[in-house]
Image 1 (cartoon, rainbow, N blue to C red):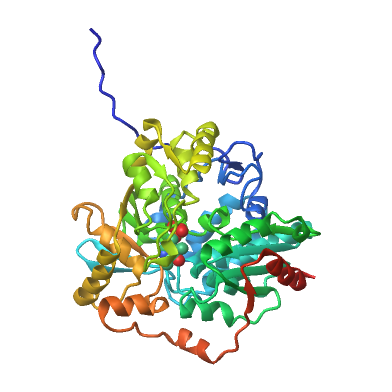
Image 2 (cartoon, rainbow, N blue to C red):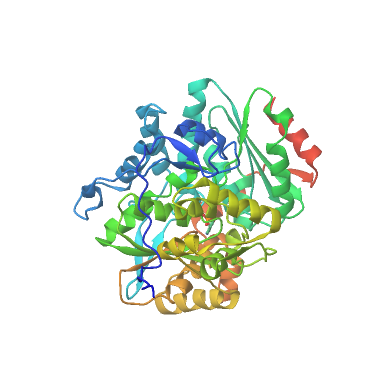
Length: 479
Ligand SMILES: *Cc1c(COP(=O)(O)O)cnc(C)c1O
C-alpha cells in the first residue's frame, strides 16, 4: 500500500527575480527588450504580452506610514526600476511631475472609509475622472521621450467604449511626435465621456465617431493596426491595457493605499480587461502588503468562471451599467496565466491557442491551483449593482459609479474580519448620470470641470463603419 502524503493543493507564486528593466513575452518568442520598445510596441511580435523578467523590490521605508514620501515618490520608486537606462532619468522625472500634477487632489488617490473595515480608493481625481488617467498621463510624455531617442513618430489608434478614449485624447493632446486616433461608437458613449473627447482641440488628435457598435470599432482598429500603408515612415500601435506602460502606472496607488492604512489590505477591483487587478498583483510581487485581490466582474463573467470552475469560455458580451467592464476575453488574463504557469510560455500558448481556436479551454489544476491561491473572482448582477449604489448612498451619503458599485457589492461578500477591504473607486459617478439616477433617484452632482465642457466647440469626424473611410481620415491627418 502506498501512503499518500497530503500536499497543499498550491503554494503562493514566488516573485520572479530577473532584471525588471528587461522584458519578455508571455508567448516566449518576442526576444528580450527594454521599456521604451515595450511602450512603443504594445503587443509583442509573437502575439504575447510583455512582462519584466523580474519584480523589483521596494524599499520597506517607502511603505511605512511614517514616511514623509508622497504619492509622487511612490510613482518614482515604481517606474525607475522598470525603465532602467532605457530613458534619461530627467525625462522620466519630468513625465512623472507632469502626470501627477494633472490631478486635483492633494494626496492624488485618497482613501475614504464607508463602513466597518470597508474603504474606497478614489482614483477619479484626474482630468477625465476615471482611473485610466493615472497611467495614460504617464504614457504620453514617456512615449514622446522614447520616440525622441530614435527620431521616430508614432501613430496610436484605439477603440473605446468611453473611458479609455477620453483619458487618451486628453493625455496625448499636443504630445510630441505622436498622433492619437480614437474610434468610438457614435451615440453609444456617455455624454460626459463624449464631451471629454470631443472638446479637445489639438492637431495631433483625431476623434472618429463610427456609425456602428464597439465591436465594429475594435475590428476596424485591429485591421488598421495591421495596415502597411499606415506604417509608412512611422510606428503604429495602440494604448489599450495590453501595454505594460499602462499597468506600471497603476501599481503606485496600491502602495499608496497600503501605506495610508498602515498595513495589509485586501483589494477589490472592478474588472474588465484585468489590467488594474494585475497591477495590484504586481504591487504584491514588489513587496506591498496585499492580503488578497478580488476581481469583481459584472454579468460578463468569463474571468470569474475561469477562476472558479477552471473553464475559460468566451460568451457574447452583454451590455451593463458598468460599461467599461463589458469585456468577455480579458486580455491581461494571459499575464496571470503566465505567472501561474511558473512563467512557462509553452503552457500559455497551449491555453490561448486553444481559446482562440475554439472559444473555450479547460485550465489544468496546475494552473487553477496557483490562480485560486492568488485571486478570488466574483460576478455581480445588474440588480445588485443598482441596489448597492442605493444602499451606499442611503447609508453614507456617498454617490458611487456603477463600476465602483460592482466592487462594493463584491467586497460585501468577503468576511468582515481580516485586513481592511479596499474597493477601487474607478470612476466618478458624474460620468454615468443615467444609471446613477436610476439607482438612487436623483442625478449625481455635476462637477464644474464637466459643466465647463458645455460651452466648448466639438471636434469630431463622423464616418461609416468602413475601414477605407477610417484609413482616409487617418492618412489625411498624419501627412
Ligand atoms: C477601464 C475601467 C475598468 C476596468 O479596468 P480593467 O483594467 O480593464 O480591468 C473599471 N472601471 C472603470 C470606470 C473603467 O474605466
